[in-house]
Image (spheres, one colour):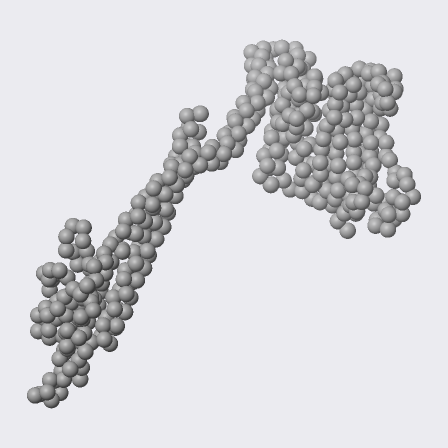
Length: 471
């Protein structure tokens, strides 16, 4: 499976790199064409400006014998342009109306045809020498006097374009390599949650299969024995049927818990939010669990802490009535299941007397004790919102400190060698009770935490928003 995740990571990194490379190449191509077009436009503007200047400086003389005829005095018009020797000089050529070259700044005439209607043309003279040319027809009163061709070296385009191409190639190569490395890191980060989810699902499936396998095997064994001995005593058959009934009930609870957690994860839990008096709910739950506590000789009690200061009482009276002090907005059935799980778990693990430590008031009784405490609190001194805090304290075996961060994980056990009676799982014995408790608390926008000391006891704390916060 690691090979599959590595292969997926490689594909993700490769796709990151390919997509980025394509985008960079498109950007570089567009940028290259834009710069090249800008450079060419700049040279064409220069040639156009030179043509305009030369056109205004031409010395045009009339031909006396023929009225209405003119000619260009070449000596007077171009005498100052022959001595330019710079590399980026602009060369001039003058052609007769018939296209014959009459004057040029080139050392040797160019063997290029005249294109009178070309305003911008690139010509190739040698492998390393190009020219950009513009040709202008000069006329007066409808008479064509000749053609002026202006040439500019092409290196002002090729040199920066060559440099730009080199810089773009180096920059894009470095960026693609960097994107490949970053893509590899990002793909690892992106795939890690999937990998963790897969591992969790794999562990969840293995644990669920283990929990289902044992009851099913025991049911199958009892059914086979009943079929193998049809003439067995009725008492034996009744005992086997009762065992099968208990196992099927256990399977039903396990399936229901799994369905509840699955629906909670997908947000499909149907929650009927209504005002719920938490004190009344806790009284009802404690009454249901009192019989089990008495069978184990455990003292189960509820302590309700009323607002103890005048300021608190006055503030509460301004916000809510006294009967609504311990009211939350939630689902009665879900909250009853939450506190039933916590109280049943406390009863299950409170099986011996623990001596009281210094400063402890919970364990000062000679008998095993499970205490449920309800009070109204503020998270911060100046907080205007009130919360209801429920603590379920026991004097049981406690939980190792290393196990506390994982206590709400599904199917989690601190010691796999323990039996179900010593397991941290609650009510179902499958390790789903605390996971269900956390899901219910989170669905009610609350918080749940646990504090424990080995051989001293455990305290689960649930904090829920009071109904006054919604008014």
